[in-house]
Length: 620
Image (cartoon, rainbow, N blue to C red; front, side, top):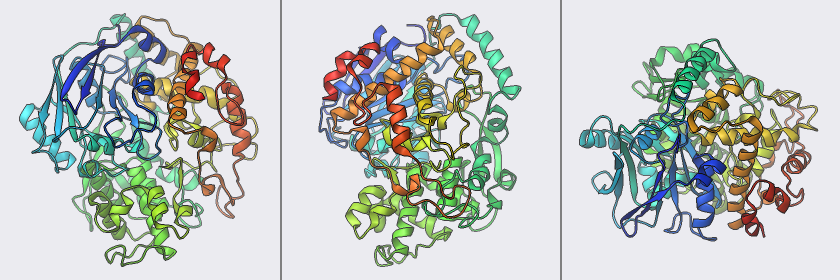
């Protein structure tokens, strides 16, 4: 059981029962943790055709072997379920302190099925669990909920909660912890709301068993030194966090502009307010996740101007781009305010910002009018309207009620050509990294089991000192796309592993690959190799794909917006003239995965090699 508590919980909210489940050795060794274990359980548990917002959907919260140990960094947990945005596999992960608290509370994972008759929260402490009445919490903001739970249960109580957006079943709702860390993607906050589950609260002091504690302690010292010495991206993350990338992304063409139709440097100029130096006056202190030596985040409070007093965790790059370049907004302070609204109401900032951009373009095209928006005039860069519309989405007020469904469903209901303005893959709004800058992202966005996710291949990067030779650099060589697809399998496989072990992708990019593998070996007692982890990551992706096939989703049939792949190509800017050869790159990736190039169906031989031939019927 090294690296695990060995215990999971199955909570039937309809019946109000809690049943312990063992975490057996096969699940641990084959799927490691996180959404690896989650996918293998849910592919059997959720019936085909289940309504994502109905009682048959299962919502899981799962840690990994790194979580709550001496590993650098062991802070994360994963949420899984059927996504109300895509109708297929959904997952989201978050850092902070909730994941370690859940594990120290005595369990590796909790799964919820059914729907509670009244609002409840689950309390996990010292190996015990019980459902508690949450009627008095229903309707509260995220911060108010966390405050109340700490008042009632103690300051050491850590909670994963939904805000009003999740309660109102917004399909772009997030699950929040630590007053602003988000398990944001896939719309799983709506699934939690549909079950009338307001929160999971965890506390405890259980120690995670580790195979070789002294070895792990020594590795922690070495890992901390690697970060101090500037290995990989560690110096960047330590100095500024992702907030320092905003201007780089805007200038390079990595950040989408004007709902993906604009060009960097043409439709959106150098955003001086978004330099890290310009953000610094609003920073009050540094903030880091559980036992993290990188400390990439900050707490901010706007000191002046119209949004004076807006506060919270510093907007990450994705948020700054979604509420900056993609809506042509130059007012940094308004981004802090929009971020505060999303965090406190429980919205995914990527999806919310993408939805605002969609609405502005619909307004520009006359599809939406002031009559629809309750008198609000939507223009590019009109930061007060952008913030106000975010509030309306969170409250499901006026046009916000429709937009809370996300841009794809909103476009389908609006019609009149609005579908072209909903930039997505498979129903999931795209993140703020442009395939016209890195073409392989188009393949990852479309064909990964959880579409529209840059973290599913760690932006096409591998940890420093990895053994893969001649891998092209991220964002370079777009004139020569051929051959890039054959590197996706390894990149996605290793991203899956380090999403599932309970560590942070920033740590993954700030430590040498050998260090990351050694830490896992010291924790579990199994001496992992790079090749074994690649195979395990590949197995995880195939199981997630089996879930999608079971629910009628085929990777080659997933839609990705034309704009995102340069159809037609931009005429100006850093990515001018680029059209992603998505079919060629996909074929290269599928060939390497052992999948049929035309359908994406895995071969039986590949499934046997991965030890999951029992899933072959799921693929038809």
